[in-house]
Length: 312
Image 1 (cartoon, rainbow, N blue to C red):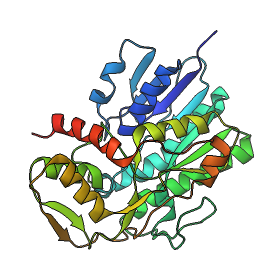
Image 2 (tube, rainbow, N blue to C red):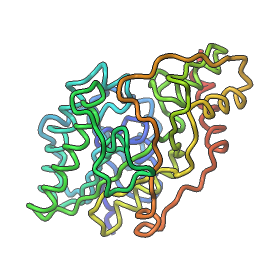
Image 3 (cartoon, rainbow, N blue to C red):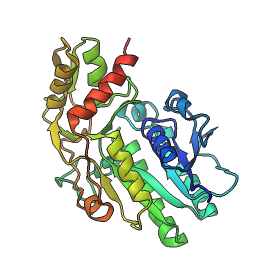
Image 4 (cartoon, rainbow, N blue to C red):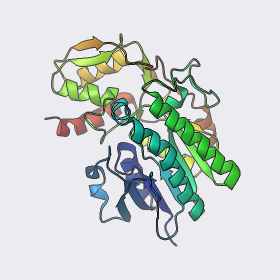
């Protein structure tokens, strides 16, 4: 019997590489595509020699894959505030043109399409926790709008292909995720705090640290994505950990767990930084029988081990 074949855009990124590895472990054949703008071949080098092929390509251009394809997972995009503030136009292009090209591939192959969307579609939410039915509170012309609106447009295009072309599409709204293979200079809370703490530098918290996030370990996220990929639902599904904590708490936890001598310092809050973030995962629990299993400290131990090998 032929293995199901999956194409992953953004395969050399943090989440894309974990997806590729887990799908290979579950006996899928994987084709990874990445232009390496924010991805890194070091994340996938251990997959060479398995049923894995890598193509260096910018998915804002036409995507050609020879042979059958069963699933297209569109993960290509800059995904941290540092990235999309430095790369605003590529972020918009991959959300719009890249999604169009990836959907075109899925349509041509009769494949199921899975879009990596984000909790950022909810903006600075006025509803808490956030259900998939919430339309969000996004500033389209603010500095974060390039990412938020790219993903909102990608969702709209995905649903248009589902309704107009009858394509089987899935939308996963990903909440803050952490784990090995995150970039040290990523700019997101966990890698920033870890790299600073491991160097015994001041740990920088924006605002007063009272803003909240919900942190999901990478293996939990990947399990949820694969369950969604194989499901028969076409509505957006939140995948995230409903355990909410303040940014100050996560900074203090990382300082303690790394045995660091670091102190917390506070800087002004970036524009449109969300004050609170917590997923309502009723839909994931009901439709996918999914919920997170990895406790925060268990996941942080594994992530700290990885960051120790990267921090000079």
